[in-house]
Image: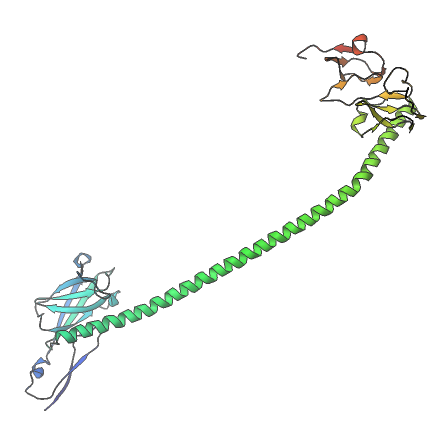
Length: 337
């Protein structure tokens, strides 16, 4: 009579092995005995040992004492419901007086073994090795699939982040280039406008100064000593029709025209005999005016002649003598003043 009974064999995660017997006299019939041992044994964190030849599913082990265990048995481990890292336990190996539990990693929380179910159905070493290999390969393929998926997702996220960063960088660069072009165009427009205005402004300034000089001369008032700071005079030339108020320069000396006339070679500006035609108004250099014949004085002015500096103590419209000859108008400045 054939047997058709099912027992728990050497397989993890609750799978079962069916054992059949063709004859009643087969020894297999005696192997259909199941023994369930209640333990509630807690594996402490210090109980885990490194596997000497680790594999994907066998890196650590811990021994659970059990007097019912024999090396000729198979077993099925049942962790307690409170265990969080159930999947870390891969399989168990019955030994004399203990069961060696193998883990793919150390559990973080205490690992409680609630019970162990034994059968004395002994598989061949070849079948056991094949079973372990198939189990480890199945677990590895599941892990590899998940790992490849995570790697692909990470690579996709990195690629998207790089593409976004490049797009933002190109957009910022395009915006900067556009702003630079706008500034350059605006600057070019302003420069062109300024260049267009320069002749007009220069002419207007010159005319304004000439009108100012004309008013001073006409009214017989003293012309300001700093009048030459307002506009650029023109070089004096012979046989030129000058008008009252024109600003002139001769041999680096500056001044103005007092009355309309046509210049002549013997009427040299700022010399004796031309006082009625030209008035001298030298430009200050660092606040010091060089002496020029027929220049004007204002109180407080500093005039330099022959390396000596003088301070004006009276106003004068026409200085017809050297500073040292008119102490009533100019007094020497002591060194250190």
